[in-house]
Amino acid sequence: MTVTPGTLVLAGTPIGDIEDAPPRLAQELATADVIAAEDTRRLRRLTQALGVQPAGRVVSYFEGNESARTPELVEALVGGARVLLVTDAGMPSVSDPGYRLVAAAVEKDVRVTAVPGPSAVLTALALSGLPVDRFCFEGFAPRKAGERLSRLREVAEERRTLVYFEAPHRLQATLAAMAEVFGAGRRAAVCRELTKTYEEVRRGPLGELAEWAAEGVRGEITVVVEGAGEKAPAELDAAELVRRVRVREEAGERRKEAIAAVAAEAGVPKREVFDAVVAAKNADRPA
Image (cartoon, rainbow, N blue to C red):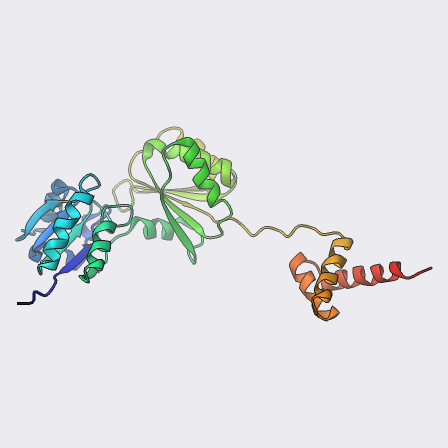
């Protein structure tokens, strides 16, 4: 007899206000065959708040046992079970347990779906006041100072808005490192306790935010940092402009197209490049 594989459901949970729980969450909690929870005590509080009595088996699934428990959950999925994965807050797999289980389930051709829910990343990004059209999520910055600086330098020229998670006791050090690498004037927003009673969004230059955080900050933190601005093209002297035009001409480009291309590269008017080429040509003529 062929057994139809079950389904892995990734469910978003409230990041603060319990009323933000997606409507489908209660139904999945009540009907799943297995609930894998990052913290079973928090799960109990969540189900009580939602008025739900889970009918399935509840198991812990956190960073410490993720590798060992994944095969057990995959076995249940392959056997036809509906497994619900929830973390303490937000979407599983986003800086929380889940990636290993999703990858293992996909490898076994198990269906994976989601109950969309609150996300600290998107909430902070929307509230930051910084560009939202392009962004990248960097998770937690490394704890060690040297590694932290190295990682920040990797994205120092990143044009997209950057989003980080950070622990309150490391916030000041991280903001100071960001000010050192990105520049003290780079705009940022520190989003604290999102959707909770003491929600706060502090916006300002990284240097000022680092000074503010030195007084001590509590709660769960998401940091949003403005992307690097476009660098102004380096000024090129007339001789370099002429050299670049000649290189293009030697490659087969017509002079008009070569002048236009070099002007675009250098960020200068085409007339400036044309005048430099004409002056060089006149200088090359015998007196």
